[in-house]
Image (cartoon, rainbow, N blue to C red):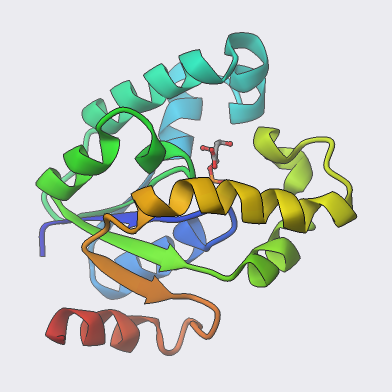
Length: 171
Ligand code: S3P
């Protein structure tokens, strides 16, 4: 099967769907954010606070390159990973990239509950959240769309996940 990278905005389900997909496809699962947190022994929001975004992105790229992946593995990346340096090209060269495309409205609903854990969404009122997501997604989607496959997640669920993935590969 090789290596699969899941790409997408915060809240697009990279970790949730990634774990499920890996289990069903009998692949190992790696989460890039978890790897970064373990390597530096601090949560992502602390790293952002201490380093600022620029240094975080440098560390993120280093981790993308040195994460000890196995032959058959699925990697959930961070929402910003594809948008910095040559990370998208690196992932396309080393595996199959899948963009978990999600509408702004759906992202807003999913992120409402977890925005306090995500440094780039701190201090956003519920009202501001949707506009902020729309604005960030507009800047980022060009990178996400460099993925080899696109999987729309608004109607995705644990039952149709694998058939939706297999359908993509048959097109
Ligand atoms: C980020 C997304 C986060 C994490 C960091 C930055 C981003 O990962 O890497 O907070 O720039 O979109 P998730 O997409 O897993 O939330």
